Length: 412
Image (cartoon, rainbow, N blue to C red; front, top):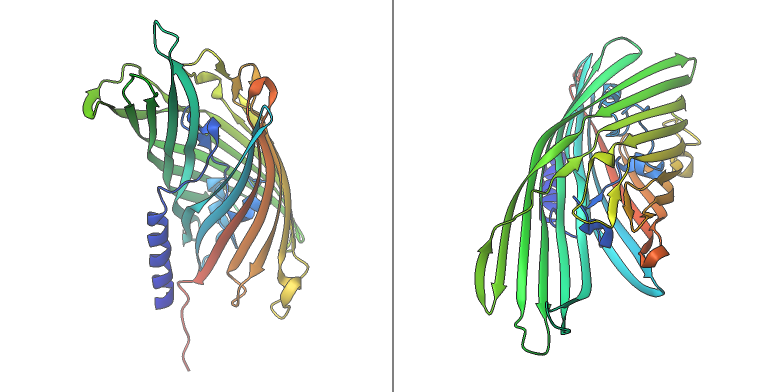
């Protein structure tokens, strides 16, 4: 691999490390549980509504199904990194607030080990926390009120190593082995203009655990057409949490003991996808994912959980694939949509999400690497019962860098 690629990878890793603790969300719904669960998939999937359980990795990495990595070419070494910017309007009871968030959010690598084995590794966000809430409390036994502020930050990251295996010409299986880690932080402050002294309660929750999920892809090719089925499964697991709780009152710090045993559940998950491809010019994917959130619970009588479903549909089209074509004829045009039923019911209201996506893939000079840009518009939540509705526009930026490895050079 060329020296400039080594430098580029080092730069990407440095930027990702610097931004690892940056703001990814400002959603008030991220205060519940492990935070806002991040949508799956990398650049190409994001532009296709998050669909792709049945699509193989090839010119891009498909993290939706570990079996997909068997589609990586034997001479290719793929590395991807992504970033985003998001504008959100929050509306509740006629009040509006606008926020802008952005960050680097993942980096991943993929390569073929031999003719029947391919691997990928990377780090991606699993959940994110970021909120600021102002409210009022009442001093017990009095009518005196005081101001309270809750600020949350952090989230859970996933470092994964995936392996995919060709069992037959048409059948591949894969396994993701992951280490989840991160912290969820909340700072509560209280103050008034009377006799109550200011106080600050800081809660830091350190979360970690190992996890494994599995996938399968089966494909049939007829001429230029490829029909494929994808299946995924992830078992339910509780994440291990440790706590650091402190109180600052009258400029004195007091260590506290966390009295409740709060569990952070990764639900059991089942996914199925169908895909159709015609050569390299057209792809269509349809996914359904079921997450078994009904096993989770919150320490709040106004919140209950239920199993939730996600539906995703996406298309990818390029007018030309010839090496001699240039400009708009070589670009990929992508379109998609999704609907996610809520796993949280707050005050008898589901917090559903839906959205549309549109994106383009711009081939770089060597026709193997690609810059992907996509726009996602959607809505989460409702204004019913004084809850909060989020309407957002999100821009995804993704680089897929495709280097040629293991090629023997011939000399005359």
